[in-house]
Image 1 (tube, rainbow, N blue to C red):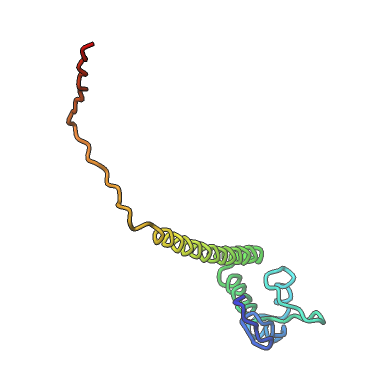
Image 2: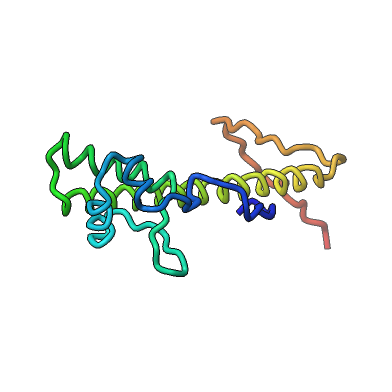
Length: 151
């Protein structure tokens, strides 16, 4: 949810508003076919308190997709059910990836802010260390001999 309260009378793509006869007419299928799809779990509409089916616009699209896969592609109902399950799984995974990407972006922004705060806290009176060039010159150290003092 986006934090705002929804209007209970607002119609969305998922609002169940169509009775089975209207859903059948909109999808081009027989009402008995819709009942069969519901029993098989292909398209499961919401139910009223009296157990009547109520279809949403999304359900109508799904009914049309089932019909297209069955009629035009020749896929059996078990195959169609598996396709729908896999499409739902892909959609859920894509939503999860988007959620994780948002979390990652937030963490990266926080890290950049913290890094900037650390850089801002550096002392400015210090001189950066520069590494001395190494040479191959050889320096020999010879201690001075101590002179013996007379007794």
